[in-house]
Length: 553
Image (tube, rainbow, N blue to C red; front, side, top):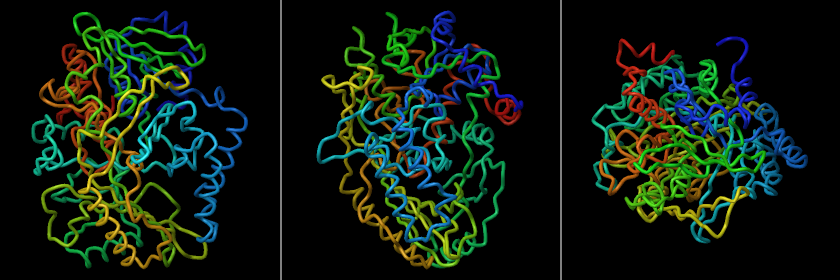
C-alpha cells in the first residue's frame, strides 16, 4: 500500500454537491462494514463508479462534550494494557465501572464487550431506539461507521467456513442453502487470501480448512491446554483460532479513483422502477437533514442484517406494498443469533501473552465424548488466556451454539415511533426455544468442565444464555432460497422483487451453523459481485489460475 492513504481524500471530496454532480453512478453500496467495503472494492476494481453511503458520521461532528468525556474515561478504565497490571479481583470492577458510565446514552450498546475499548464508535441508543416485548429482550448492537463492527478494537475477528452439514442440515428444521456442494469454496479461498488469514490447516472432518497465509504455532500455554483437552475427550480437537485484521477494502476502492464515499448518509429506502429493476436509493443527509436520491442500476445492500431488513420493509410501492420481498412471507422472519454462554476466571501460571484476538477454538465441543461429532446442530468454544498481574492469567471462554430459524422470531416496523431521522423503528420479537435452552445447559456444563481441566478458578459463568442478539452474530430475516414464494433473495443474493439489488450481509442466511458468520458473508459478497458483473466480464471466476490476480487486484 502506498505510504499516503487515498481514502481520507475521497471522504473529504465526497461533498453533497459532489454526490449530486456525479449522479447517476454505476453502483451504490449501502453500508461501509465488512461486506459493504468488499463490495465497493471489487466493483471499483472492476471499473465501476461506486458510491458508498454509510450512516456513520465523523465523531467530532456529532459527539457532545460530555459524551466524549464518558467515552474517554470508559475506554481508559477497560484498556487491555491497563487491565493486565490490575489485581485479578479488580478487573471485573474496573470493567463494571466503565459500563456504568455508558448507561446514560448507550444502555444497550454498553452491554457489548467491545464497547469498553471504543465507546464512541457505537450508536447513541436515544437517537437509534428499537422495541422488544417485555418478556423477549433482544440486544441489538450497532456500529455506524467505516469498517462496521468488525473494525472495532476488541472484536473477535474470527473467520471459519461453514461445512456441508451446515449448508444442508439433516434434521429438517431449516431449508438447505440454495448452493451446490462446495460451490462457495473458491469464494471462501479468494476472501481468505485477501484477508491474509492467520491460523493452521487442521484436516478436521467437521470444520473445513481455510487458505492460510500466516501459519501459527501454538504458544506453550495453548499447546498444554490442547493436549489436556485431547487426553480428556476423544471427540474434541482444539485448534488455533483463524483470525485476521479488518480488510482495508475502502482504501483499496479509493485507490482506484472510482470511489465516492458519503458519511452521515442514512438510507431510508431502495427505489425500483416500473419494470421491477432497482434504480437507486433515497437517503437522509445527517448534516443538512435533507432527503436525497441517488441513482444507479446496481445496489448492494450491506447495512447489517436488521438494518438491511428495515430498509427492505420501508421500500414500498404499488408493486410491493409491504416492502421488497414481503410477498414471500419471509421478510422480517427467521431471525437468528448464536446461543452464547460465557465464562471468565483466574488461571494459574501466567500465559505470558497480552490480550489479543488469538484463541484456541474447539469446534463441535458438544460431541466431546464421541469419536466424531454426530449429525445435527452443535456448538463450538473459543478460549482466550492472557497475562494478568501477580504471575496469574485471565481466562475467558465463549460457547456459540446454533439457533434454529423459526418463523415466529421476527422483526416488524413500528410506524408510530421513529428514530432521530424520522424513520420508523424496528420491533424485534425473538426468543430461544426449549431445544436451544437445553443445548445452552450443555454449553454451561461444558465450560465448567473445561475450566476445571485448565485449573481455572471461575469468577463468572452464565447459567443461562445471554438474550438473543448478545452474541452479535444476528442473521436471517431476508433469507436466500430457490423460490420467491418463500425467500427474499435468490441463490445469487439478488432480490426477487428488485433485479439489480443484492443483499449480502447476514440478513440472507437461511441457517447459521455455530461458526462466526463474517467469512461466509464476505464469500457471498464476492460471489454476488461476480454475478452482478457477469455480463460485463470484468470480474474473473476465482479458479486456481486466476485466483491470485482476483485476490490481489
